[in-house]
Length: 257
Image (cartoon, rainbow, N blue to C red; front, side):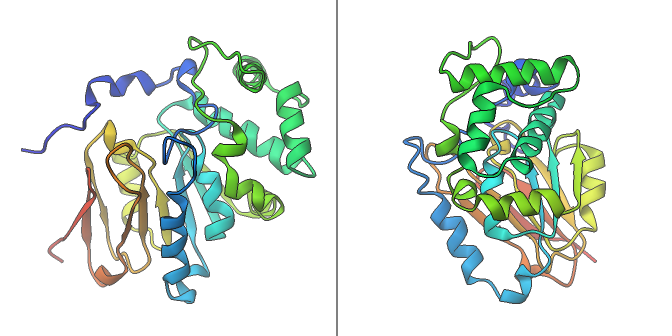
């Protein structure tokens, strides 16, 4: 019998709840040192350069740590997903402000001042939460915040223009669902050239995903405290179907053809 995820008891609190949006990530080392990123970068730098030519980045929204992977992996396609629709709205706002700002200073100033248009009550709610976060007074009943945006998105800020170009030009799909859902599983099974950032989803869910022929599939999860960043590269298992067991740690097994 598969054990339950450590925090499976409160998994439902993230479903369609505006107050459970993360304004700044808490992924990685809890001192905010960003040390975990070196593991991810070392893997990318070490793969065959041909594998980097057509990466499809698939990232949970969460606290948007996945923004750092855009200028690192330089994807040609983007998919952002989350089980919490307000988190998707948050991502769309951040993307909109990023792609219409000339530099980091302007981007942060616009977030702090709420200097951008919004559409509807949810976007207005999130804009105000961002303003409150930037002023250090976001109440817990409105949303969560752990780190500044400067610490949350260090690599993306260091490569602001490249991130902006990819966010502007790469085809984008937004999926309102969890990784454990049947629709997500059906969609991803035949995908290849996908590099997935799953954050700490397995703290809340254990589930399986199947891949038909993962000759260029990479999965990154970050679980803290107690675990180093985990980079699971399925390239050596190409040529047939495999099953990835999203647990702590990740596991993979071949399937019968």
